[in-house]
Image (cartoon, rainbow, N blue to C red; front, side, top):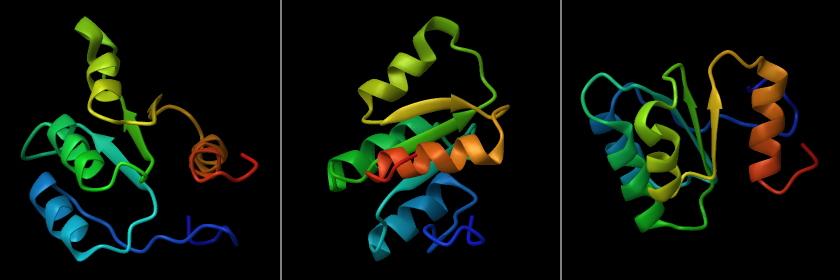
Length: 104
């Protein structure tokens, strides 16, 4: 993502616990959450992120199917968009730009 002139990765986390630490440090304009996470459900992290700053757009990438309303659960937690991991990098970049108010 850092190879894109208009996008910059400022922080990365490998778990919900690490995500909470990064979130507390601030400086996040948008978040991409890769589901599932190894330690907890990602929906709780998304909910916390949204409650802490509702203006931060959150994109969830997942390989999980929408079984029993999983996507709806994320949307209710405050996610801006849910996309399958099978999309390409350019589509992911377009979604980040869209959520950030760019052209997409």
